[in-house]
Length: 130
Image 1 (tube, one colour):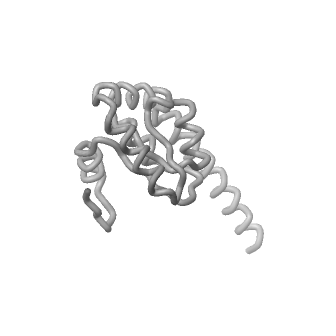
Image 2: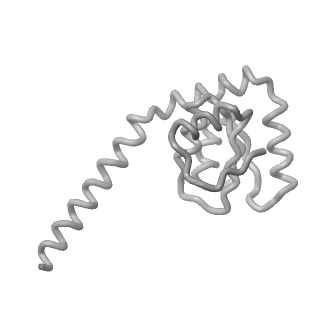
């Protein structure tokens, strides 16, 4: 187990994920996280808190990870045990299949476009106030 308390470069992030058996996402609350899709893209399954975004994606891609009740260490241990006891070839195949359902260009570009629209609208509102 390694804890790195700083921002990682893209290469460091990929290296850490690559060296992992599974990716742990122990969020207490969340509306989304790019780490889940990044883990799948890097062929790693996840163990994630049972929260809306994670639960939705893992319900659609059940073989690509396990869920646990946030704040419940016993449930976390069981989910980790379940995931690491699966053959690596099954985990890799499941992560690849899940990643294929969410290509980055289909996930990121709509978010970028929405943010650009919001920023543009806010800019026009600010100009009207001036």
